[in-house]
Image (cartoon, rainbow, N blue to C red; front, side, top):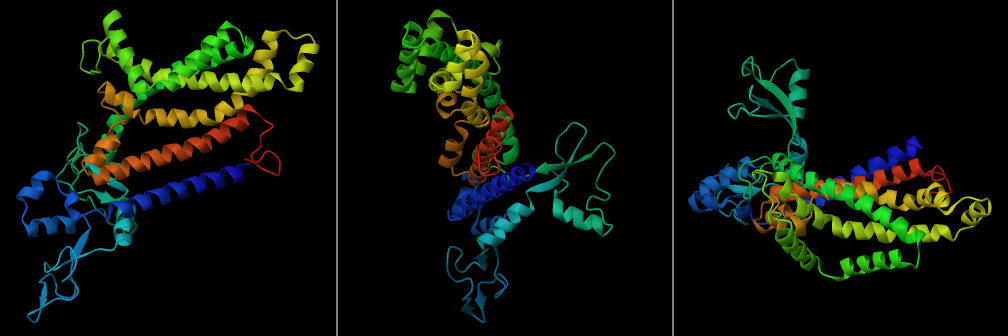
Length: 396
């Protein structure tokens, strides 16, 4: 079992790395202008632009002509083509850039007593730090004051355009905290309501409760979500006086979260109701349920001791996946209610060509999606001991 878990874990890590590499290669096909802010494109000279691209590791000085662009009065053949024609610069290989990306993924930064980064002290990546330490050298020797702190940070570069010069990890952490607060509350509400009403539908199949639940599920899935959100927003504001937009600086910020939470819960509740009812109805037709009833167990005992536990197993597989993606935010709801979360961040980063931020968000979603499926399989084994994930029987 442990061997299988480790195998699946490392497979998940490899898939995540593969996704990151593919996205990295695709983004490096974009023109180099997208690595500058709008102000830099207007103000920078050609020399300043190529100097910045060199600092970013995208270009390097041509070794044939040492950056002069000519050799013995003739154009250098090595750098006299492509985007940087005649400038003395050549494009670095994408593999070299990818190596830099992974090399600098973990780095040491210096922070003062107030927790702010000391910009005057250059950060050092983990591998360089360990290499110097192994040689008895200290890269921060003489630079650290008594109240300075050295911290190891995860680094995905800085936002180029959308959140100028802010670390991508800091941007994602700020946005995720907002999405997680709203998303986890809505997920808890929808899970409880969905499972409870799904059980009631299965217990009173083909009765009024089941018909009402089925109608609710059909309406939620049939009507466009934006229409439902508009109705909820107007009703909430008109009849209950709820704020129509999210505002963390409001006098009572909790009230501004109510409508987004309700809208997020609507669709998830319908989904949990549908699947809970379906799995419970399937279980009710099995032989062990008939046997339990013949032994004298009441309908309630059969439902909660046997049916619900077994019906919850398929739902449990996707629960971690749902939790992780909920933390990642909802595009429609967060855009509709102006919630500054993760939902609209990816589309805004793409529209503004913020390549580093796009890369970081894709890495986040890939990690959450793949690890959610992995954890879901483990959760199934905990709920149902018959599922072992190993051997010829019960393998997923």
